[in-house]
Amino acid sequence: MLKTSLRFLGISVICLILADIEVTTLDPWIELRRMIQGALTPNVYVLWDFRAAFLNTLVFALCGITFGILLGAPLSLLFHRPTVRIGCALVRAVHEIFWAFLFLPIVGLNPICGVLAIAIPYAGVFAKVFAEIIQEADARPARALPNRTDPVTRFAYGVLPIVIRSVKSYSSYRLECALRSSAVLGFIGLPTLGFHLETAFREGLYSEAAAILYAFYFLIFSLKWWVRPRLVPVWIVGAFVLLAKDVSVRWENIARFGHEVLPWPMRRQGILDGTRSVDWSTRETSQWFFDLIGNQAFRGVWDTVVLTQVVLGVTGIFAVLAFPLVCRHFWGRKVRGVGSIFLIVVRTTPEYVLAYIFIQLWGPSMLPAIVAIALHNGAILAHLTGARANQIELREDSPKRNLDRYGYEILPRAYGQLLAFLFYRWEIIARESAILGILGIYTLGFFIDSAISDDKLDQAILLIAVSAVINVGIDTVSQAVRKRLRISVGEVTTLT
Image (cartoon, rainbow, N blue to C red; front, side, top):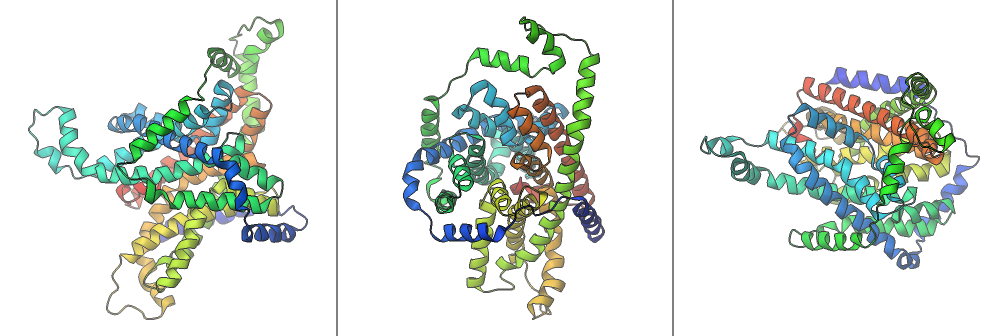
């Protein structure tokens, strides 16, 4: 494990040397002081004006995760088939914002756009995680059933009772993630909290932005009070009733989208002469493809991979240093309480929001993205590693000093799980690195956003496909590394 860690750390250092981490703002301290002042004086009176955005954030999340479970659960039973496994990997490799970009031309700034943007990648995630939960479950009850038992009965009586608790726990965790995704979709114009948050930051209304963030934290923290098994059906039905009022899809939009995603050389003559005919010749299309790959995709992939590897190393270092904040073997209840609040706030804040804040301070280099993604994922890893470390029982000859206990007792015993958590998050870090290009950083998201802004859906589709392939490749390498290190998949399924 140490050799693997050092290799990846070395790659992160090399990528850091190659990364653009220049600070381009003239005086970030002035803006920082304004942000701190806004954080200390939140304008809570504006929250009533944003009540519709809060409701939309909830509706998008509830409907999206419901569709995701309904689609992902059946796919998890077929996940052993290569076509299903590859298909799920591709759909979950595309970030929710990219999915929203694809649906915008079809349905417009419509609630169904936000719901589908969450539901489709989450279906791929649920299929993968549910399949892993079933794979790691105790198989003895299913084997004890008569040999002639049909598959449905065998699953209902031999598998479902064993896995239902893990499925519920993971689904509850994904609801929190769906709320973050729903809020972030507002940054591209959908009517959720992110829309008003982005507006407040852009206009320098930091007291208003702080109030929105604090309200969002309360929404996340309150999940344990209102997401009860008996109430969940009520919330879901209510969400779909509200959603149904605003759904509108036109066939002509679908037809136009199907035409516009074809490469421009195929459509050019039909557009010029008004016939909308399609030229299926391959010479000009091939030239268009290789020009796009060479001029945009190659640079986007390079910067995305560089950013991903830097963040991977920084995230690991942050988690190693931060997990003792919530570990009972080092601190008392008060210190652990403060540490826990810090980690909760950092991991609850969407990485897109963190990056947006840091860009206001430092400018659109890779530095804001590195700090934002590393803080968000590092807080998640530190929280989980600290929880694992709390289960460790100290030996009688355990060192008394905290530093010695950390270096010689706790860290060596918790490090394997920390690596498992880190490599399991690798794919997600890559997705986040790509999407932050929308904020002006030259990753794949930057070129995708530019293509969407210029109404070049054909280019956007190809670049999104490239992003998906890169993420699938990273996930494949991650699985190989975890397998070589003999890390059990079942122990990290709560991290996707």
